[in-house]
Length: 324
Image 1: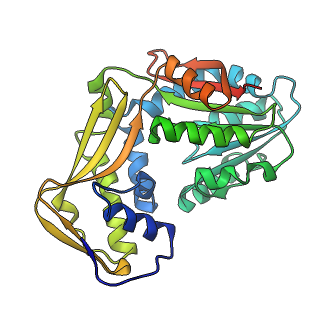
Image 2: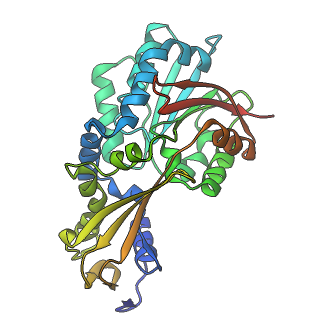
Image 3: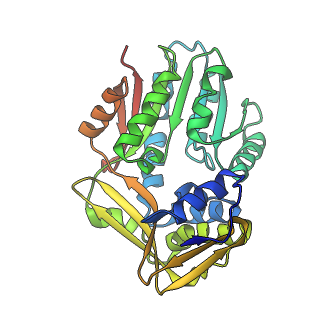
């Protein structure tokens, strides 16, 4: 791999693509799967029979909505509901409707890296629930966490759904949870989804569907590089590959080059050489059990105070507070 000439990298996307494709082994962040095309592909993934995660969490909300919102604000003193990685808000709407129905005083703050996702959710909520006060924000988790303390003086309930924590290996997850802890006041709460360990084949199928939608979703990062950074990836020359280690609970996604090839990325003045069967690591999807979640939270200055599970125990949402 060689750089055609020196270039100042302006955007985070440019910087991280350059760093990932000049590393060995190569990697790209899964957060760059998402743009207008990627958002639509992920909507399709959530409807797939193999992708159990969304349905499991949706059912938890549907069956436990009243108990969940009571755990947020037992004495109805008012709070800000802050959701990191809000997406389309389909599951959250169950809680918003219940909060409205029961007369809670709350503000909903959906936060996502995708401008398209936040704009769509805010617009949709304005039509469906015009009386709900919604304040959408664009940003990455760690960037937004630094601003959380300045958003409001009210109690905060911070939601991280969809097992988004699973995109981080345990050391980074602890780093994330510690930052979350530092952004919290003593009465603030975290409501977080953790996908549970289960039959390895069920995990593999969830990230490698037979219709190939997940493959298109992963490859969208290459399409984005082509569109936004003037790259010339032959997307069809890469295959999507999924692995799962039941011991560590780590599922990993890769894009594998099917031939020896060279890719030019003009905006980065970069040539990227691939050997046949060389991979780009694109995503981690960590799986958990109660002991791992307890360990992660305790290492981060937090503690689990309650949990809600679907009927198959495939998925759990944990209510978490500061330990001191």
